[in-house]
Length: 189
Image (cartoon, rainbow, N blue to C red; front, side):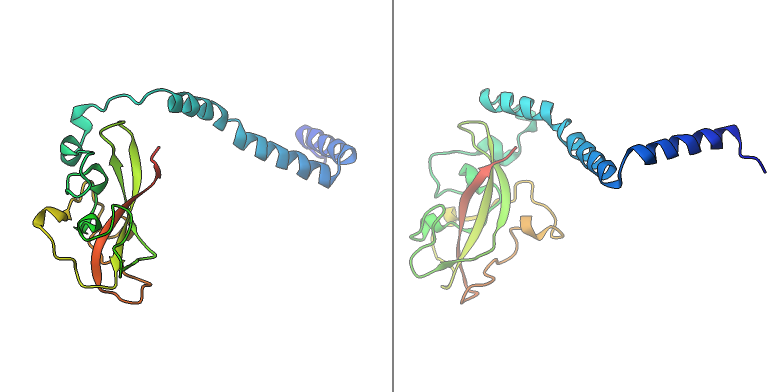
């Protein structure tokens, strides 16, 4: 059986390609194309992100703000409506001898934390906040103003890293919960 016209052309092209290139050369070109192909789509995005980062943030539309974001304040970190406390559940360490991101003396911070994204009303930007429990002593007794459960945009328990309903005293010498801190990890994009 005689090969068809398309088979003959295909064979000629394949033989010409095989005689003029090596396996390494082909693999090198394919690798270069893959790397370059992955970089080109990012370039306009990086320029747009850089331009957006230098501009002042736009004020948020009031209809898109959560209830917590509408009443958040930035002057008193010992109140539940302080902007960093958008996803905190527990007693504020600032009311127990610690700070907004430091544990009181005699306690130790848990090596694990849960996270939330809170909007600062002063600059209009959102920040990733790491909430860390301070462990090793019994729960701090303080006024009810310092006992917070602000579950702004809380996720269900199947995403435990965003759940504030878990005592996060894993990996400490004592699993006794004392209070919670709220440290800024970085700006949310």
